[in-house]
Length: 126
Ligand code: SF4
Image (tube, rainbow, N blue to C red; front, side, top):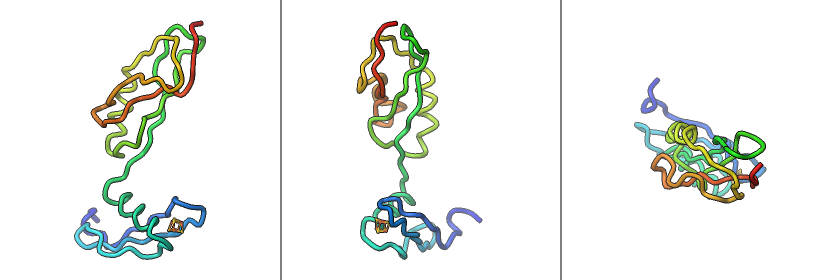
């Protein structure tokens, strides 16, 4: 069954601990109805999750001159889910030299997503 032949999809809403099971009814891949959500927040969440899902990405990059060889980093904002592989590839080519401060941008506009890669920890020179 192709994506366009599906008539419904079910998403767990993660916007609050109630965890409503939200169903989107589809016609030719387009949302025609949203069911099972208790509030508008859930409807907005599943519409976005279905049409253009985004995620924050966390990973590590090479770190030179510190007491460990990897620096944990995260994206400064969510990026399209389909861009995650490109972000990971770009991160694999980044090397940061200590000292580095938590919050420091280590790669601007990573993979053309508009998000930056940001250091998650401070490391002094070893
Ligand atoms: S639909 Fe509303 S009540 Fe239900 S889990 Fe989502 S945010 Fe919570």
